Image (tube, rainbow, N blue to C red; front, side, top):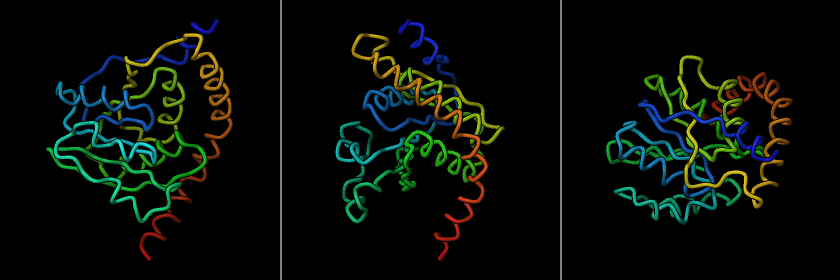
Length: 203
């Protein structure tokens, strides 16, 4: 039963050449695997979603040259510390993203804004845990530009439907049910929320 649920959740694509790799915040293994794909030449740029508890450990990823995210975050209240870090041509660009109640949905919403600001990106590898992929597909299908081709790639270092992961599998199924209800409303209010956000930023 749990193996069936895990396989249903973890419908993964094979890595394909793309314009960029995007990695969800969370397990370090996601970013380690994405860096391996970058080094293999799968994509020329890597966009990392970095949550508050990952900031201190960011230098451990070994990307040259590293940046001091902790220093950059010091003036920001801890609950609001979340960044997109773009690594391209051996250089970093850091962009703070809004923190809302639903982490994954907020990250994909911020990714949608980032893609609007980068119209040259037409294909994307989205990297996360296997059990996370079905929910990511739902979010990306609703929120991202229609002309962006996405492949959803599972981190190989994270386990499947072992006994220790059964609660996580059940929780993920519950989250998917919630997202099916919330996503249509989120999609409707997104244009209004973006207008408010950019209006505040311009003051």
